[in-house]
Every structure is written in structure tokens, then in C-alpha cells.
Length: 336
Image (cartoon, rainbow, N blue to C red; front, top):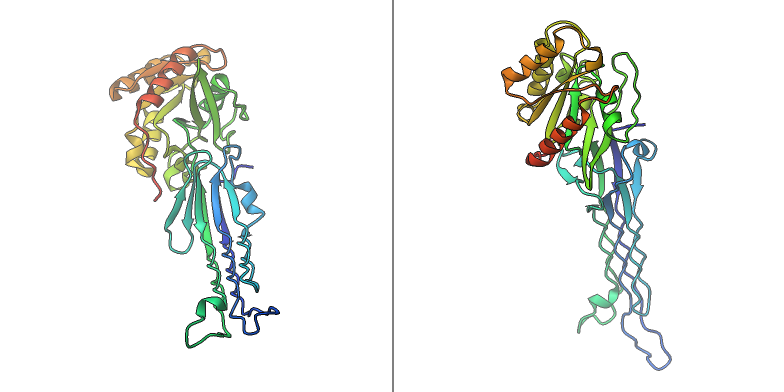
């Protein structure tokens, strides 16, 4: 199940207490203090795991705690350090402090590892407190408690190109035709309920493409699947807007609806490089393709005609997607 928001509580380990002890050996009748230090508590780390693509596991386990440090022992023996705890998250996860809203980490690369909560320091044993006037201290320092944090985690997909459009525009069919992704496809609106990622290959080069669930008027305010999935467009470098050519009528309204929702959600996203694509060309309504072409010309956008089902026009579109996705500057990550 695709889950892109979760809240968990993490706690680093407490530090172990310092020890109060004295040397007791046969030929050392007045041995000095020998209490060892407590071990530091374990840290909590988050790691970007490329094999995970959802926050679903965090819905079942919401509390995570690292190991506490062991207490110090006599004979100057220090306690062991607490065991660190690692929380695996998908690439694209943004971790915030749920109470302050502070951004603690943004996992953008596989294997990226960031400490979220530091373990408490271990306490000093009584050996540290011996002085010329206090040769037998009978006290030690306790370990410090670890940090406890509530974390708000949000997943934003990392793709170079986002495929967008109204419901039933053929987005899922396209991504299944140009990649190994196999989303659910049916001839009714809102078939796609979650974003899908596909990797498009061209020789040794690859391009990550995201199929975003269909947008409708008012999406930026939550209409339809709304803002929940618009955020997955934020990291994309370029946009591929599909317009269904099998439905009759002027395409200007369909194109403008998507533009308006993007601009209302984020003006910066609306300015990204964009391709306009007439889909379902094998079943095109009269004059519909020309209407879409005219809308693209008015905006100065590259225009393509495809049929993912009939596999026509795809090589030219894939070439253009690579050019747009690789040539565009990396998108600035919005974490507001």
C-alpha cells in the first residue's frame, strides 16, 4: 500500500550511570576510587533505502528506541555503548520535528544516513572526582537521558519527469508502454489512485518518470485526489502533460485547467519545462488533435501526437522526455 505521510516517535538511548567503587587488592589496603564511566546511549539514524517506496511500515510501528548505555563497573571498567537504531525510509523522504516543524533531514540519495537523535552521555565514575583533599569520593555522575522526538515524515517522489493530465488521459497506459511499470489501467476516471514510478531506458541511459493521478479543477484545494499527490510533482525537472484526443471539443479548457491547478499550487512548478502531448491518437475525435496543437503553439510548447496502445509516436516522445528531463536544471526542493 502506498502511504506518503506518517508520524513516529523516536528515542535515543539513555547514558549509563558512572560507578562508585574502590580498589580492593591484597597488597593495596587503601586503594583509590576505581569506578568506571557509564556507556553513551545509542543514537537514532534514518537511512535512505532504495528498495522501499512507501511509508506503510511506519503505520504499524510508531515508536522506536535505541539501546541504553551500560552502567560503569569497578576496576575502572567502562560500560558498553548503547546499540544504535536505524530507521529505513524511502528515497525522497522529508523528516521534520513534529513539534517545531524544523526540517531535520531530506533523503535524496540512496544510502544517505543522518542522525536524528543523539544518545545521552554516560556518567563519570567516582575515579574522576578524586582530589588531593578528597581521596575517596563516594559519589559518581549519573548518565544523561537520551532525546525523545516526534517526527513527521513526508514522502515526495524523486522523478525527473512527471506525467500529468486530467483523469483518464492515458497516463498509466503511457508509462506502462515506455517502462516496466505496470499500473492498473481501465477505461474510467481515477483508475490510478497512487503515483507510479517507471524507469525508461535508452541505451545505457535511464530516466525516472512518475505517473501522477489525474487532476481536476480545484485539485490544489483538495478536490479529487487533489493536493495529496500534487506534492509529488515538486521534485520533477520537467512535465509531460497529456490531453485526451479521443474526446470531442476544444482542448483549450483541458490544457488551461491543469495549468491553473499547477500555478495555484506552486507558481515555480508551473514554470517548469513542459511538453504537450495528444494521447489516444488511434481514436482521435475530428479536429481534436489540431485543437491541442493550437493550444501548444499559443504557449510555445513542444507538441507530440501518440497512441500508447498502438505504440505510435513513442520513440519521438521518449527522446524529448530524455532531453527535457536531463537538460533542465535540478528542481529546487520545496519543503514548506
